[in-house]
View: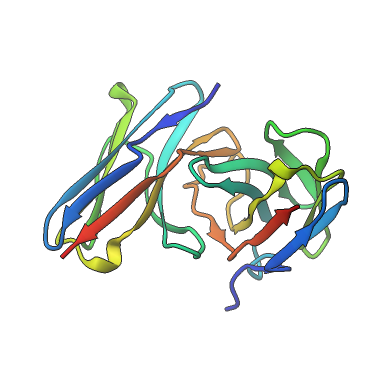
Length: 117
Length: 108
């Protein structure tokens, strides 16, 4: 069974540009969540999707957005990039259904490492 | 807000036992999970505690005390390959919140 696939793995952008990151979850997983990881900050929750609906959103500005397609694939977009957006963006998929006794078992992709110059 | 606290770094020798603690806020708490992340790698799920007590999986055990808003990950018979970052995570409703992570360095 293929794992979570994220593309691109690495990218470099300049301030003011926008970026779109893609995530293909494990087959059969309908929950997809996104996290930003920076040194010393752990994983900061961005958003969670289930069946094309955003279930939760973290405390990030409106420049960060996402969506999920009918095949459970997800994308996130960051507009008007700032230097502080440089980070590893991790996508995770899960079999769990929101609100139903979940264990927090997420399957993470390798991440997309974004550098903003 | 919802925050978790864990030590930033722990060092231990091969063969030893190490405990990584995690304290959390109680509001809306559902359960405590642990993840391992090697440098440059993806976080991988280690364990989950939904109820008080100890869960054991091989050399790793995880403990939860809901009355103390506290849990820990116990690693026994440490090996060099256990050098990694370890994150506790708490599910609040539909959101999984992670701690800042503990870097475990295993020395020979």
